[in-house]
Image 1 (cartoon, rainbow, N blue to C red):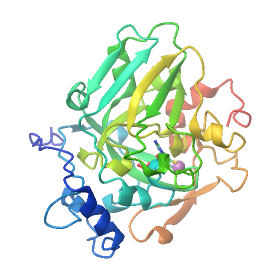
Image 2 (cartoon, rainbow, N blue to C red; image 1 turned 120 degrees about the vertical axis):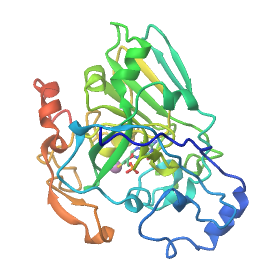
Image 3 (cartoon, protein in one colour; image 1 turned 45 degrees about the horizontal axis):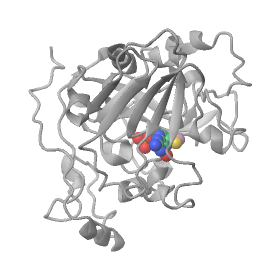
Length: 329
Ligand SMILES: Nc1nc2c(c(=O)[nH]1)N[C@H]1C(S)=C(S)[C@@H](COP(=O)(O)O)O[C@H]1N2
Ligand SMILES: [Mo]
């Protein structure tokens, strides 16, 4: 097929050799102006000839034609430099600047709880267990900006099938790495935005089993950079971005709804469901439109109407037939 990619070249991934030099380089504020617009894996080679920053590697995958979009993709440099990942600070550039040292290999992802076969996946198994595919998804942040991102990964349902979900399970809980030594936002309440760490998220089981629910291990054809949630993060494109939890270490099947980080922090503003809905405003701003981050500066981003379920109603509206979406926001 034309969309088959050449054989993968799996290079050693996270390369991070000298933490102090990076911190120094960052302190000098040397990054920023000098970064070329079009960014490749070599982008992360920002800190000079010693190649100390995070390195991503090529993935072997096929593009899934069912998940293409009419809109253009958000350029890689925007996807990797305008982020929310409060473990590394609340500023949009903080994740990029503060996460390059994140150690993602070794990594351990556990699938446990109400399953027939609990799984412990290390970094290599995570990338090899299931066939990888590319999907273009809209990502709509609750802050009313959005992107279109080419993710590489596999359906969450495929992983859950490997573990064998017991009939007692009704929900799935997710947990991000807790490692205050590596994640400054977990050491400092102000820097971490007041979130009670580890960051946790959850889905109803039928939401988790929906074909759109995706575990991403890469974007733009390469393994995820830390700021986007390396080595594995959830992507649920019909929900606000905060549901798409990053750098996951635990997936737990439960017989009840789990607590979720943003809901715990501000329950009147962020619900458990968090389905993208232009008719239900955030208490402090409208959700009717969004700024689509594409070519050009972030502040030149075009304002476009927000679509119900972020445009994925055909795939997910049936899940909420009996739910009052004003009450269950
Ligand atoms: N662990 C963790 N996951 C997280 C967040 C976070 O702060 N911590 N931020 C969320 C929010 S608000 C958004 S919009 C998306 C952003 O994903 P991106 O930076 O890859 O675009 O990640 C989500 N996942
Ligand atoms: Mo977000």
